[in-house]
Length: 187
Ligand SMILES: [Zn+2]
Image 1 (cartoon, rainbow, N blue to C red):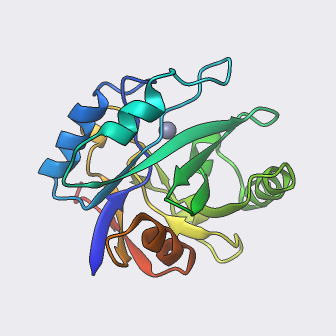
Image 2 (tube, helix red, strand yellow; image 1 turned 90 degrees about the vertical axis):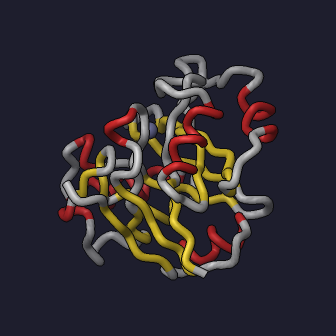
């Protein structure tokens, strides 16, 4: 079955304007099938103590993935970490935000992998806007599209449609295998 989802979104636990419940309602209205909530760590590399518990307790028609947006401090590069039940997916977030060249993107990918975060995917979007420079086979990561949702204009701009059963681990495995396509709202 083809499942539509967003793997990068923020709530009031960091710099998003919607509570987790409010954000989930937005994506239910958009008819999505899954949503990863990926709030930032704060400057002390902590999230609020209630974060995990709140996400785990969310009730929704959506399949919810717990996630986090990490910062690889040495390069100030954001990395998304999305948790399935057994699987975990690491995503190189928005290289366009840092105006990286393809060569610089490859250098960052390698440095971050060496530091122990096994990147497998990369965003070819910046807050939902397509950045085709990064959509190249020179970068050996699967290319995903996300909203990086913080506030209403971002919700539903960019997504992936994954061919998988309705199961968090199956979705992550399908993304790794490239069994998905990216989609964008009409501007
Ligand atoms: Zn983000």
